[in-house]
Image (cartoon, rainbow, N blue to C red):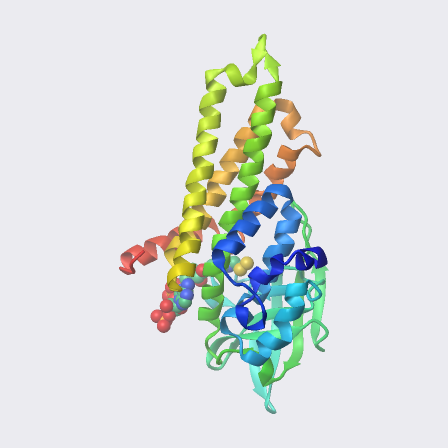
Length: 334
Ligand code: COS
């Protein structure tokens, strides 16, 4: 994380007030390039953005001043705590409460699937107050915040369940006004869903590069794999999927940067198409490697595991379809 900070990349995760350069095209390009090299580095980069997004987009001056500089330098690790055991896709069902007591907020509940859980310095926690869902910045050392256990996954990254038991925070922790939490979560996801598409794009580009190298060097029936028309058709489909995903991802990013308007539909389209097509591109690359593609430790085997979660986190493909259809039926302009 420190090296990402030293390279200046984390500035793209934060707004300009504190010296950042928040720009969705830069965020998308960073994830596209980082993911094409190393999915774990991309993940580290992305979580700094997601865990700070609500502060960057909706935080007060004081909150930005307190958190953003150390996020940009990589000294402070950020996390976004929305999901719960019974509230993943259905955000409105979340049960964590924020009760007003003696001029402070007391948070109680369980958060799960929290990326950077256990290693983050602060969490943006969504909880239900009397006014509705609300967003709070909870420092990791706050009394009452416990890490309940690490979750191991197909392509490991730091992921944990958190328990909030009478966790007290002051008014300075509240982002925006009480009751604004749902809109804050959704608007943050509009930005970061686009970048999930960008990460999928980077993984797909890597798979295509691996496949090209493979078909040039692998010989079957006396000629290179690349000389078979079946191989060429597969490569053409892979390249088409990569470019189409890139156009949707960068369209969403451009729309946000140039008009600074809601990009819910464009972001959903970018995430949906880029993640689904990356899965197919990577599967095709693996097929071109034959048995070598499923051997543990090869690049395509790793990509095959790494791409899978992208169709689920920050809104499943099914949720993206609901969002797209909702925007069409609701008549919102693209
Ligand atoms: N930006 C700003 N405001 C938004 C918004 C967005 N992207 N999306 C919705 N809102 C607002 C709406 O305008 C609406 O406001 P009003 O009540 O003032 O009209 C309000 O929020 C409710 O919107 P909606 O009715 O669309 O909400 P739903 O409960 O139907 O939720 C889905 C819709 C399913 C799309 C939402 O719950 C979702 O995205 N779920 C997936 C969550 C997710 O990604 N989980 C993964 C965990 S994060 S790693």
